[in-house]
Amino acid sequence: MFFSLLDCLQYILTFEPTQFQKILILSANSSWCTRGLQAATALTGLQIDIPKQPHSSSDLIKAFQGTGPPDARHPANGLATACMPHLDLLKFVIANDFESVLIIEDDVDWDLAIRDQMALISGAIRNFTDVPEDDQTPYGTSWDVLWIKHCGDWRLPELPRLEFLDPTRVPS
Image 1: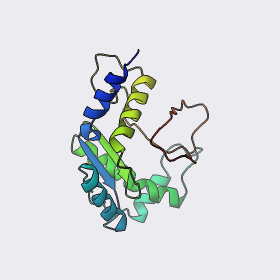
Image 2 (image 1 turned 60 degrees about the vertical axis):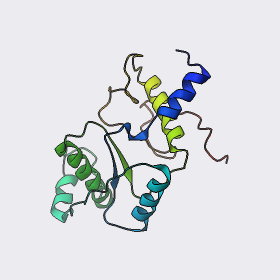
Image 3 (image 1 turned 30 degrees about the vertical axis):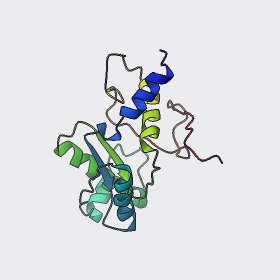
Image 4 (image 1 turned 120 degrees about the vertical axis):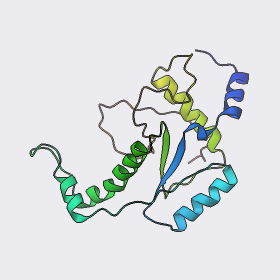
């Protein structure tokens, strides 16, 4: 598929990261991180919600650590504790019947060029997942959870990986 420069510019200018039904922030409580995100939304025009996170009891964390077959690798206490808020936020998404949600941790920062960057991600994901041309959704619909990670995250080597150049990135 070939896009002209005009097509790309029109797409970038009309693209809205808010094509997600909600942008949710994963945060244990109000902090300088959440206040910084709220200030960033004022500069970029994005709308975010910060749902209250329930407390994860030690019994719940131990139960989570024990899930799966006995011979499987189980998460240590620290990892299990860190996973619980993520699971709670996914339960929140399901309970509220949201169709599409962008979940961001409270320590994330974004550039004023967030719309351009999300358009790059959208195009890359559409190509990676072979989204048909007649599908007008920004990321396609062939996934349940789309995990946008950073380049330093560990992954299983046999899993496919999508990388692309981001011209908005500060050169190293």
